[in-house]
Image (cartoon, rainbow, N blue to C red; front, side, top):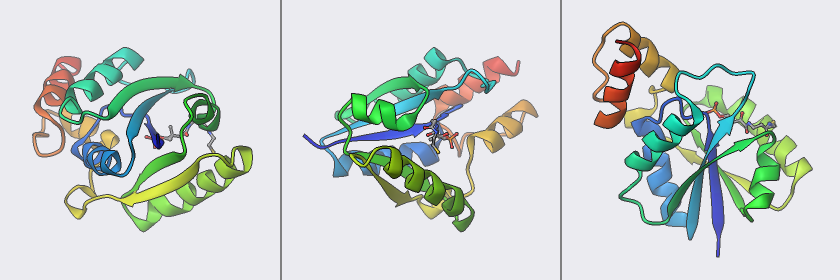
Length: 158
Ligand code: PNS
C-alpha cells in the first residue's frame, strides 16, 4: 500500500490545502494529513482544533486520515511507513525553501521522497496567515476557506 504524508501547520486549513489533499489522495492508496506540533510556535488553533477542522474539510475523501506529529517530519514519515512527503507549491518563492527541506529530509531518511504538487492557480495567493489577517479585521473569507473554518475563525476573533 502506497502511503503519503501531507505535513503542515494547517492553522487553519484553506481551500488551497484542500485542493492539494484532494489531488494527492488520488495518487496514493492512503494520504495522512499531519499537523505539525511545534511548542515554539504560537498557533491560533490548538492541535485538536486544527485536526478537527481538517477532518470536517476532508470528510468526502475516503482514503485520507488526519494525525499530528511533534519533532522531525522524517521520523514521523518513517513511523507510519510513508513512501512520499507531499508539498504544495504556490509560487517560485516557495520552491527555494522547499527544495532545501526536501534535500535535508532525503538525507535524513531516504525512504520517503518529496513530491511537489503545484497549487491550482485559483488558490495560489491563499495562505493561512493572510486568511487570519483578513478574518481578524472582519473581512470576507468565504472564497478562501470552507464555511466551518470561516465560522471557527469568526469565533476566535469575536
Ligand atoms: O504549513 P507549513 O508551516 O509551511 O509547514 C511546514 C512543515 C510543518 C511542513 C515543516 O516545518 C516541517 O516539516 N516541520 C517539521 C520539523 C522538521 O522535520 N524539520 C526539518 C525539515 S528541514
